[in-house]
Length: 95
Image 1 (cartoon, helix red, strand yellow):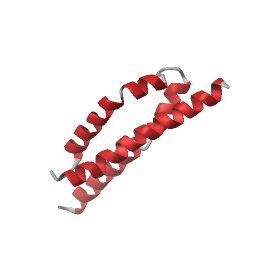
Image 2 (cartoon, one colour):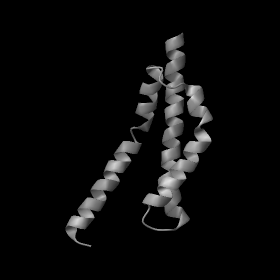
Image 3 (cartoon, rainbow, N blue to C red):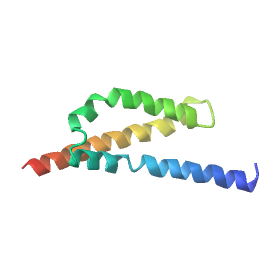
Image 4 (cartoon, rainbow, N blue to C red):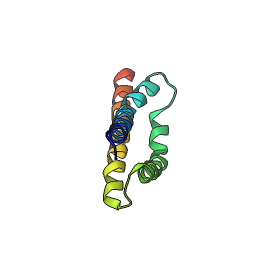
């Protein structure tokens, strides 16, 4: 590895992590604009979990399940956080 390769690798990992951490915000915005309902987000939850693990399997540099879970579980938790916040804001606006 050269320094350029290492910096490039780290940059893309940080960029991907930053994008994933915007998921709850995106979910709240989409529900506030009535583009998607919270019930739809809950219904597609199993598909998102599978997709999260597939993406984690593709982007992790190793093949061990620990690293796969280390990447996929935060993605799933952020999705759940997005559902929680979106449903909280939806209830708050209807009252």
